[in-house]
Image (cartoon, rainbow, N blue to C red; front, side):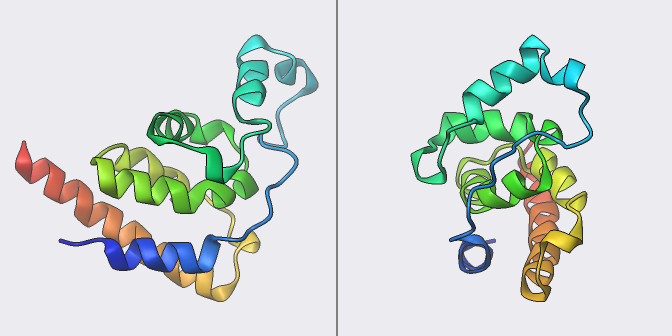
Amino acid sequence: MEYHNIIKKINEEFSGIKRPKDILYYDISEKDRNNKIYQKIIKDYGELEIDNIDNSFCSMIICDLELLNEEIVIYFLPKLVEHVFNTDGNAFLLKQRIKKIDRKYLNENQQIVLKKLIANLEEFENELDDLV
């Protein structure tokens, strides 16, 4: 199946979102925020702008999605979706994180497009499974 339509809809609904200041989950304790792993994540993503992301960074971001807060996930979403559908990778991790996004950060159109994205990611996963 072609996924150009969902990529286009995600770009329409989520492009132009302002980059949030904080990138980690808000409930991480100060002690954990001083942990070397968290400091590395802040170093890797702290100043990263969506226009400067390549495929290797997309893969890194997808692997770290569980540590990133809602707003930064939404900010990176257009690039991550394009990456997943164009490289056949990490659909499961992206789908699982998208399902957890607090809908209070989304308008009605964004919520509808996210539901379609989840369905498309599930279909995409099935297609990849059929290839194996």
